[in-house]
Image (tube, rainbow, N blue to C red):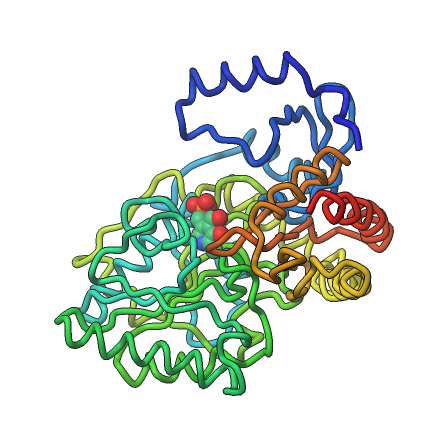
Length: 429
Ligand SMILES: Cc1ncc(COP(=O)(O)O)c(C=O)c1O
């Protein structure tokens, strides 16, 4: 495998310049890559080289989707104002979006990002319950505001005392015990611990696809018992759909695969196909606190343009049957990966639902999770013009989350290259 043509001194120089201006927050996913254009499932670099995008989860209905782009442009040219005015675009969007949620989830507060949505949901949960304790999974990423990072063990090492992490719902940890009961027992232990520490339980917050933990989607329904434990303890269940929502897991919402109705749902990235949009969907009773205990108003969230982008995204998902596509193409992808696993023992597990897939890579000799191999795999894929990412607390899992327009020929293209990458990694390891 050779480096693609744009690798070289210019890229290195570009990377140095970027760090000089943006600081240490400006790290790169892989060996640096300068992208100049996106279209559908493809991204293009400055040399015109095309990359198959299996990772960027912002443009969930595809890069530069013409309907979303036109909706944003048309609304920008007409009116863009905040949600404190009567605004038919925003109201029509809220009504349409809320019809996609089960009762009693009947209110939408729009935000600019998933982090802001989780921040607000946490504040609502604390105000509604009068308690402070939060339970999350060990690799979770719920965002980067001051409150959201506190509940993101995947992004920081030390958690504050009122935040407790439980292991991801991994059947290998549960052994012979049914996953739902095992996970509910872990939640129960932390409910007790929070009670004893004087915090009590405000909420269990989970990404309904456990993507940052390494992707744990099955068996559908396993979350229900844990949600029961939370409700018995008087806490709220917050389903973070920033990753799982809008069809990613082959259902419109990740939580619906588990047959549960959350108290609060948080939305983000895919909602506007990259236009900065997010939201909290809530039951009436939980929003009562917004007027006094929890102030929230973000003039940049819930604008007319955000609503127009959101409306266009829903149109595309519905008109192009993208939830169904997510199921069909996701299944084909995992089937192909499982076939590869028979020839490449580095693949220890393939998990996922819809177009969200996690692949555990392990060292051949020891069978131990191999973060270094994952890092080399994403770089080798990138050198072969496929963009992927890593996940899991030990970063040993590969994560694939292509646009929902991903098709059978893209799956074939990926599997062919991934087989060659695995063969190279096998030789090296
Ligand atoms: C599950 C989940 N929740 C929340 C967030 C934060 O969203 P944002 O980056 O839009 O603030 C992320 C970010 O990747 C996420 O994966």
